[in-house]
Image (tube, rainbow, N blue to C red; front, side):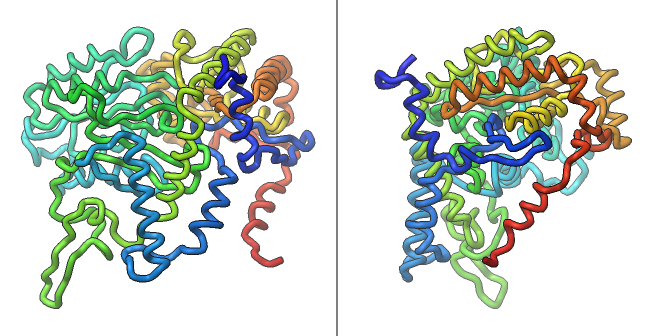
Length: 495
């Protein structure tokens, strides 16, 4: 497959060369290793031209926003608002959609949104009947959700319903229909769905889920945290029933995005609050000594109290510009190539099991486990012996993990009892490899060859490590702490 009559790998070379740390090396117990970054679903990487623009163009004019009188205040205010417009245009937000930033990612904004909706406002315990059943909101989620789009809803007034998985553990819109019928008497129905799994990269038919939610008088929110750096986002497709009432994503997962804030965009009709979530500077038109005050009418201003994260917003917009420059069609072409190579390479390794192996159309995330090997040992060996950066664990998707690994109720409770006692040794998990269009074929071949060597030599190599049951981590016997000392030295500003 080619892009503009060039091999796809070659097309992305110009972007690859600008990644900060693309040639970075570090010391390991087995010598000096070059970083091969394969953890893109967890975090993006810094991008040189964006860093230069942040320090060279925006940096000299940094000053507090909330004014257009001083030069620095004006420049930053304009930059902040222009960044918001770039982000809105990118997701095809409508004139009635508002953008609010918070924290460092999707977790912060979805919790803020739940507070804005008034779903965390009951002063009684959730088990108390402070609401009649028909008045209690119900939230439908899928079995593949990240914990941020699952546990956060548990801490609201709402009842939470996990939709039954479809064939092959896919998300089946028909099962959403069935679940909605059981709760047809509820006045407030919400569907909050991940656009794709951060574990397997499997996509969900979220526009179809939106159509079903709206047909039943409900709302549809979509979590784009895992997929936003790679796919088109359209809040308002041609069919109005397929519109997205709210979206959330984490720009730090974009190339160039680390250091940005979490982003949510939602229809202003959902905003019913008489007061902002965080009252403060910039949220009021006036106050007086007699306890009187008036909040500003603009929702975006009202929910942006104090000094806003203007540099974070600017960085998010710049990362989106970079995504647009790369082109989502080009990104998918390259990821398809890399995934094909990944599947063929991993499937040739005896004892290696890919999760959701039959679903090939996916984001560039492939999770797997190797018979007889702890996932965190595999991660540690990849890092120490090859410089390969991947992630081990359940990827904050424990419910999905139960389905993927066929963990029964009794087995689950045995594991959680051990965890509650501080023993994580039986906690299930996997290794997650995430590819990126800037990755080279040679890097991927190195990863696959490394996994084969680990599979063949793990019994010998594992003797170099000490396992801690309380942390579930492996430490090399000769580990010196050099890396931690180096990090501490970075905070020294003296020459």
